[in-house]
Length: 139
Image (tube, rainbow, N blue to C red; front, side, top):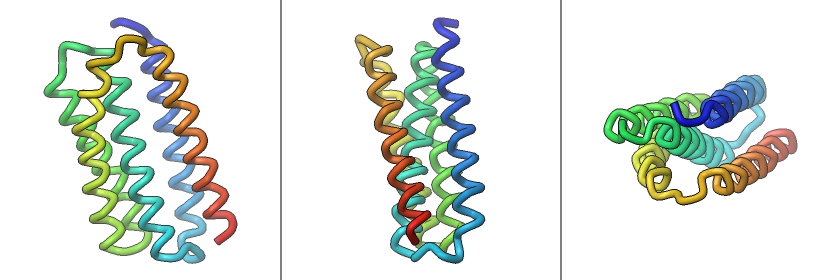
């Protein structure tokens, strides 16, 4: 194991996404189809990106297994969030989660300064979740 902090960040991200899923699920009847599609695309992609990058930083020599795990995790998250709304949103979240899950380990494998990138990535994740939270609250 290289660094336990990457695993802790990954687990905290996944817990945050699970809490956001519970929040969106409670308010899904108030959310429009367009916002639902954006939610499923954004969160499917973020879960795939977060899983792929942090797992490849933790286990750098298991590229194939991590790529498959990140793609499946992103697909699952996109499908779960999209299924709250309709089949089109589910399909869009599934595809976006798969694409981000396939690309994230490639990005994580070429990082030269993973700590700086982790800080920037977490800021982006926080900002996107804050915007989605505000959009769901206003809908």
